[in-house]
Image 1: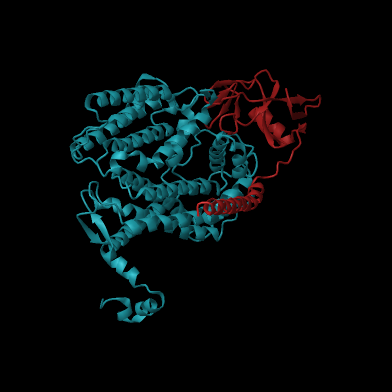
Image 2 (image 1 turned 120 degrees about the vertical axis):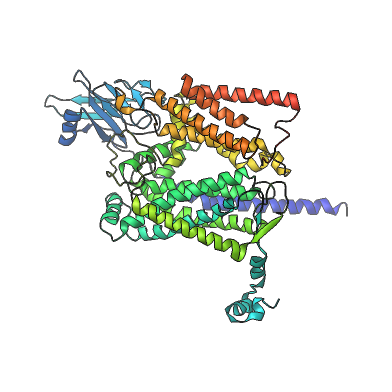
Length: 152
Length: 467
């Protein structure tokens, strides 16, 4: 009996192991397609340059800023106190709220958690951990504004 | 056995002959609810929560008859419901009020269970399933908030979902799965809709079945120190009739509130005006706040600096919240005195400390005392808010402590003292919230060590009536 028992034990262990691996593989084959299905496709969008529409340009004229969609990003295009155009990421680096340009105080402000940035996108106050990225913006001789995701 | 269904005939006899329901009838006859040292009120809160959940399901199904998820239909269909559909405003009001009342009754149910140590063996898993249900209910609130597709919901969801990117390793994957893309778009609403009306209800109903099964198998927890309650009242019909009466009161309260305040009591985080349609290209506006039960996390996110311990502040904040949730879940195993069916005043005080901690952050999130009209930028003054909230918390903590000393003879106040000290140091001296917390925690640790060295026990030995 003493010689037979380990052999039986080994065979059973092997079958148990085989069964366990099969169950894990089966679960994997079921879960993998579901997990892949849940993650949306990352479609590369255009990175610019994007020409502002008349309505967007009017917004820059009146409000001194506008949020412009470029590919999958949103850019804050604004006119600084010297009349120069600038473009920054519109997504706050803290929790992703959309920031705004406050012309009166010449700063960028996120209303969600009171994050403040200077006109270069550097953090002035509040919880944002990183500066806002700067992007390229141009006004041509006819006054049309184009913006792109390229770094300024 | 003359009253057994088999002998009685009729429908019960017919059913019993086929399905053997006699044991179930006998079980209901024998079932008792323990009556002990504490008030019976606490035993009714689970039932009240279940009632509000039932109202949620019924009113939710009614809303589904008209609601259409979509870029050009979500906001419009809600507007149609509240302005055109007969009693549509009432159905939405009942759905929203019932959601808030369900969370109120669930929070009180959870804290009463905690204070009475009903989680002690053999009911650890009842506590765990209860906390899981609480998390699912918060999921209902979060996912349902986006469905009207208005400005407030859009930004609250943007902030709420952005936090998950801090989860190590799978943060980005989780963010994309939740949002259906890198940003909050209408794809996010589709996912939240599926979550709100199918996934969460299935999980919740399944988990409620398990929670109730545990309670039916083990009965309700007797008072601390007893293995069996000295006396009890019959569940059927005595307790059930009381339950039904409470449900009627809940319904009356719900309908009254829904009629008088169809868009909520106009408290930030406690209102559901439809407002403007969501515009992903509009900047966030001042005063955006999540629902009142998420305000403490919202405020905690504000209190963390941009970087801490080499990580981003939001990441550390998320770790702190996960740690707090985990310790709350593991209370049945952490509270070793309650495991021995002995009073555990430290954990009672832990519960009070948790209430003070949550209350201070929530008060701050409401900007109480901020006096925004008097500031140069029109925003609430954070120092004035902290000062006012610290005084309110001091008054609240004082009242609770006096009540605990006089009525319950409590003698252990270290953790609630730490929560109060943090608020006072932060609000009255101007220390940062985290620095004040560190000092308060160090002070609490010193008191515990001193006490241990003096008495050899972490808690006072004379507990009075303290659970």
